[in-house]
Length: 95
Image (tube, rainbow, N blue to C red; front, side):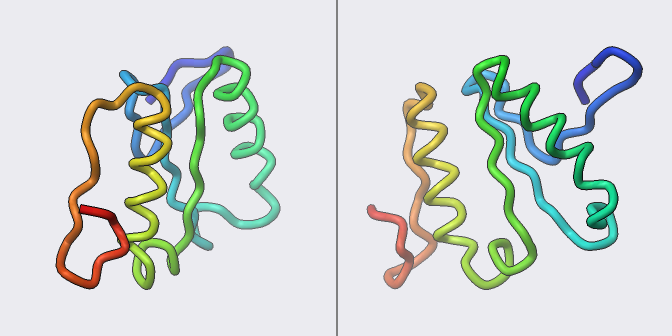
């Protein structure tokens, strides 16, 4: 949760030390008529030098390793000193 003028923003995942936020978009919490709120939040994060990554159901359930790899790349770009670990021999995350 981040305070903002007029209320609060709730982030799904915030890596504050690496200025990165990960948002998981689903139909129930993110209907098309309310997407402008996400846009405003993402733009405010960008203005503050932060990166927001948005993923949907397929990213989380069908390509989780590729998603984790991309999140790891962005975190490393912002100074994260580690690497994501592959989940097994066929994982697309490099060892």
